[in-house]
Amino acid sequence: MTSPSNPKGSPTGVRRRSRELALQILFQAEFEPQLNCEQALALYRDSFDSEPELWDYTKSIVYGVFTEKKKVDELIQSHSPHWKVERMGLVDRNILRIATYELRFMDRDIPSNVAINEAIEVAKRFGTSESSAFVNGILDGLSKTLHK
Image (cartoon, rainbow, N blue to C red; front, side, top):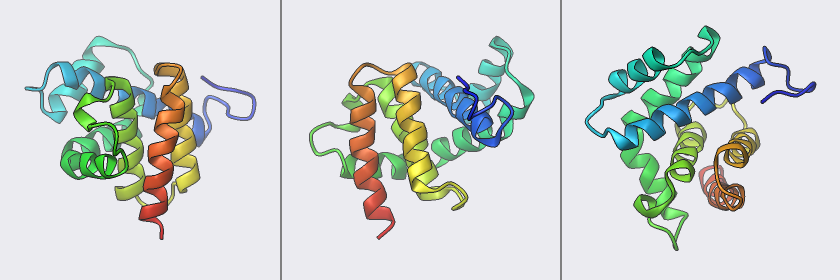
């Protein structure tokens, strides 16, 4: 998904598509929990074509979410009093994991508002009609807590 203000080769365009790939890999891993990170990445890469420039950021997200999953889920849960993480829709849960990982564990080259907006846009594309509002609500509260 690109636009004239966000051309395919721009850093933002590459990162959006990398987040979308990471979402697909993490979604797939939900159905095959015996897969480790390397196996999940290899399975996706062997099954689908993707642009090489997407893989660095995709791998950093996927590795990060796999590595910090417990902490990421705890952060999400602490800002979702009405929904248990394990009861969230798979797409929403993994979008939240990606954005939470970016907000909490990645270098600060990604401003909070950008990480949140990207998660909302990915939720609009892959989630339900309610996903973007759900994701926005949780990430907004999480961001305020993390960046006090």
